[in-house]
Image (cartoon, rainbow over all chains, first blue to last red; front, side):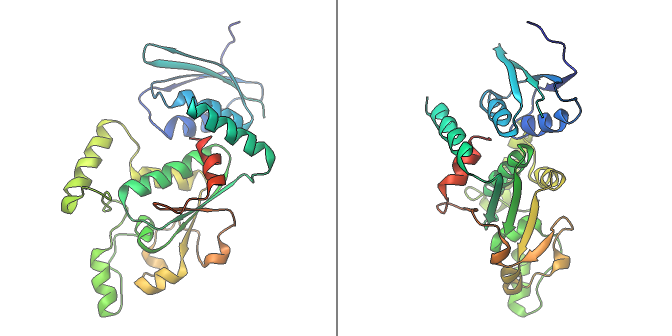
Amino acid sequence: MEVKADLTLDLKGLLCPMPVVKINQAIKNVPIGGIIEAYATDPGVMADIPAWCRSTGNELVTMEKQDKVIRFVVRRLK
Amino acid sequence: MALEQVAEAAAMHSEREVPNRLSMVVFSGDMDRLMAAFIIATGAAASGMDVTMFFTFWGLQAIKKQTPTGRSLFGRMLGVFLKDINGVGPSKMNFGGLGRWMFKKMMKAHNVTSLPELRQLAAELGVRMLACQMSMEVMEIRREDLIDEVQDVVGVATLPRGGFAFEDHAVHLKPLARTLSLL
């Protein structure tokens, strides 16, 4: 199922810790239940974004890697 | 996979009783160690943790202005060698500043956030930066020699319990496991 994103983030080229810092800033700009779609190139986000979701209590809807770009979708839960 | 096991263990651990708090003792003035300390601090703060960094001894260079320090002869001599955050070099391969220059160039080429930017980010994310009263006394560094982002000059009792020391060996495992799940 495709969901419509409230906010799209371009995190390409950013390295640790910036993807986590940016998603943390961005989540405040969407309502609870809102969706953020992001694109990153740092392979570290494959581990970091799921961990960030666990720590902050938000939901990782999907994460997939195509070539060098990682696309992930996060839903704000609180 | 080992990484998954660590993450799983950390997740289980966090469900039990770990307070959502991270305290670090930063007592190195080496560029590489300070990078690690500020990356952990910003990553943890961005994950909703309450983060405290306690700077002592050489670590004070990370929160010092580039001003001459010291009152006594020895104090002023020491002041000549103390750097600010832009002047600190790597723990290995500094070669009198050449290594610092090389690492800065390489980090920039790879688009890694610089040390001063990380410190600024830490302040914006609400990381509490504290300076050690005792080592400031010994090294003859005054409050005015430190950047404004430093919240307080304190002693050891102020540092919240459960912190871990950020140097080669002294690492308490519980907060580290918690940290690994964040970074």
